[in-house]
Length: 331
Image 1 (spheres, rainbow, N blue to C red):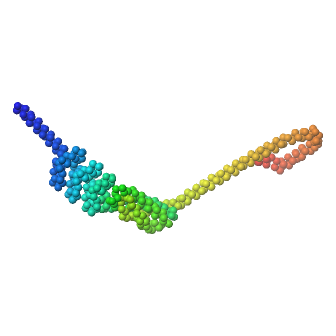
Image 2: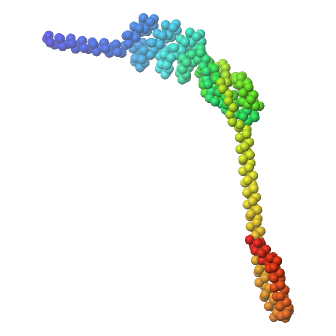
Image 3: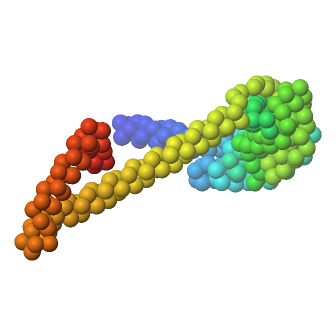
């Protein structure tokens, strides 16, 4: 009996020990004590409910303690709902505290909407207090005289809390400033006007209201650097002249080809007419033979005709106009 009673006591002690371990593991008593002495009234059942909803109580209670110490009135339901929606509770509370200290009107609902929209609400509050400088890349523009101007600008912006949800970001600011620089330089008559007064670029760009529809308010646009680039106008004229030259060469080649084709056609026509002459010459002996047989041509007349032909060929041979012209023409 004594052994059985001792064994029972040991089992009960082990069970009590395990129960206490599970209890203190599941119920954050230490967190509840910290909240109680920090002035945050939260029930143990609320912490157990957070465990059941798979919400880490420390993710809710610690920011709530911080907000309470800063004088903000928040509830566990608000913070837990924001946590379950995928928001960053700690960053949101830090942003609300910073906004309160800087006297920036930012309530919990707007801050939660900004955080859930994917923007860093704490950084937005910090940029509202301390403006941010956005540096644009090198922007190339061409003045009316064809000279390229390369400019770089620094844009000082301040976050606009009211337009953070749905407002465009830094990329839009950079793109709009770049467009304004290109337009301003392009309307200048000479690149020297831009170099003499680069402030005219910032004044013109700033007057266009480039921050409309964005999450920022542009405070100033400063031209950090202006350089002279290539002579785009001269390059374009050179390219145009080269293109005109190639067009003229192509047309000249076309005319030359047409002339060569016409020459070949004329040579072919000459050969065709020469063939007709040869064909006609082949009929002469037959005609002479028929004339001799019919008595229309005498033998002495034939000899005199042959003597005339021989004399003509001799004279042509001496003068060099016999077959040479015909040969050159045939070529």
